[in-house]
Image 1 (cartoon, rainbow, N blue to C red):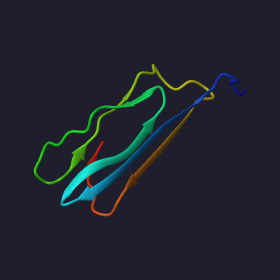
Image 2 (image 1 turned 120 degrees about the vertical axis):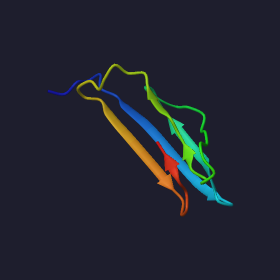
Image 3 (image 1 turned 180 degrees about the horizontal axis):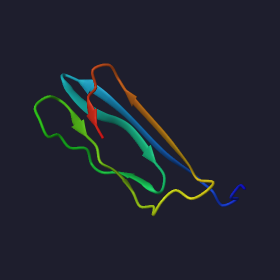
Image 4 (image 1 turned 90 degrees about the horizontal axis):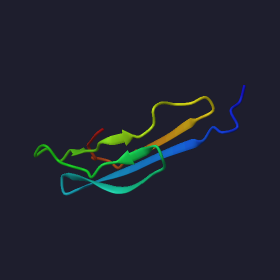
Length: 78
């Protein structure tokens, strides 16, 4: 049975390496996703991202589209 109220939620992340450090080049999200401000925990150039969801769960008919692009040399911890 299809739920006519189902919705698609999107999360897009693109990271780029520049001078040995990874940066968030582009991002986009729709509810229930949210991306916290990137942070760096080490000297290895790794960017850490926290992805949050305000949803209580995935309902029947819902779809999640997650696209992550990393340029050559980019290091990301999700």
